[in-house]
Length: 417
Image 1: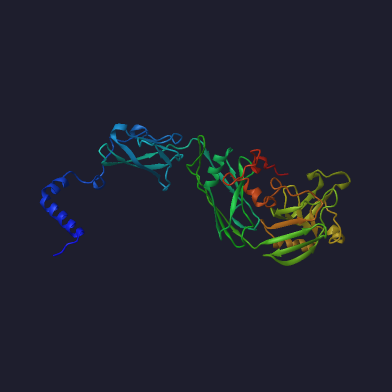
Image 2: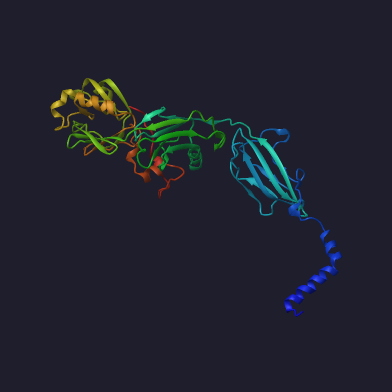
């Protein structure tokens, strides 16, 4: 039989293997592949910096895993808490030390699994369970408003039990405050000061949306020796129709829209010169069927003093700006601005407005010669910041200005008047 050079070579190799069979068998007895060997117990090889006797670990200190240089090296470390969160860490280049870079949670249970290799390359493993001590200082969070149905302009408020300073600490807070919105929409937190932050979407809340706000900070390290406390009850809100009242102080008319469609136009009067109504977007804060309005309560006296019984009053600022019935100026509605800053209308129109609008609905004033609505401190003027300015107040997405400041540095929550 004729053989090609390749076939002759194969034949010679086969014969060689047969003749050296004993040698081949002997080579196979050198030992099993280390990759298929059952890992040995690395309890004597691996050392943790945790206290002896099961004492709880200080969460303010990093976790360390080490092996002696002549006893092999660490191949992998996995540290997971009871909720499935992994603790971040770094392995040294020589493989003899692993150190956590993420913060341990306070009052948590962890399982650490370490894979090693000895000096001969055989695999080892060790598992350790440990618990961290409870926090001595805890940060609690109170959400607002109360559970219920609100308009598309209602911001979410988070009030903290202790001041939180610094971008890293604030970012930790924001990551733990979860806002679940269905249908979804882009949104962000904005810090008013060290203890108060607001959340709003880029645009108004979608009509009919369901919002759930929860606190997932329990045990999470916020700052030095400050950890998140108990989560408390989640806040649940339902968003109603998109109700907007566009108050034109120049034409003296209000246009009311529901979900973008005009449903009413109302003749009005707004603030006269010297008391001009603030321009901008305001959010309904509450409603009072009857309220006695006194000029003295807002610093108005002398010839401008007043003391009036007012019905169907819908509040839009803490300082006393309302949409309300003003039957004493009926002849001026639709033609002149004669109020001290409120938006006045007939009693029947005010009753309709009172029954149609609710907390969180939008009242926007345009074409007034008054000042602009303050974004914070006199109601909810959050929507008067554009999206870039709003995001600038978040520690997670803020863009720092050239001087190193941000919008959050200058925004302060002023007391209600």
